[in-house]
Image (cartoon, rainbow, N blue to C red):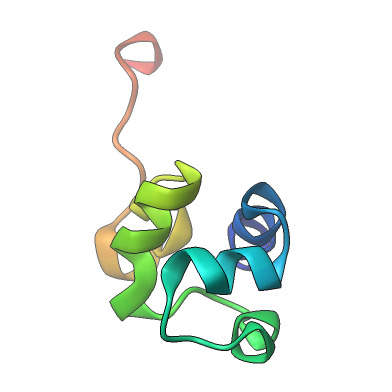
Length: 70
């Protein structure tokens, strides 16, 4: 989870850019995230393209298997 949170910040262009894209959250708060807050997961999924299943598997479950993995 922590890895994907860090990756989301990087893909967005850093905490400042991510905070600006989300709106209503400070860059300082985003910098402190070890895991994405539940209320922000769907927004982050839309903004950076990382699946909610990767961002918060504890809430959304493991990522669905690809057909190739079956």
